[in-house]
Length: 99
Image (cartoon, rainbow, N blue to C red; front, side, top):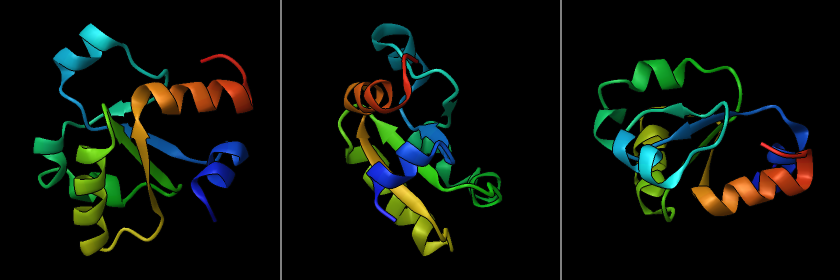
């Protein structure tokens, strides 16, 4: 399944890997869980236990790509790099209504 199909289905778990101060400065996506990239390794069991597809995002897609690579190496079955938060938010708003 593609990222667009997962987002359209509404069956996913969003994880923002930016730092908390970035959320305060730049904004966030309602319902997204904040797990900064530096905490992903320590919280991998929490992430791996999510029963929905996991969509990771950050400011540009770089950190979320690193997080996804790590999580896939640890056994994540269905994960996606959602890219930058602003683009992901705009996509979600366009496909599912305002967030």
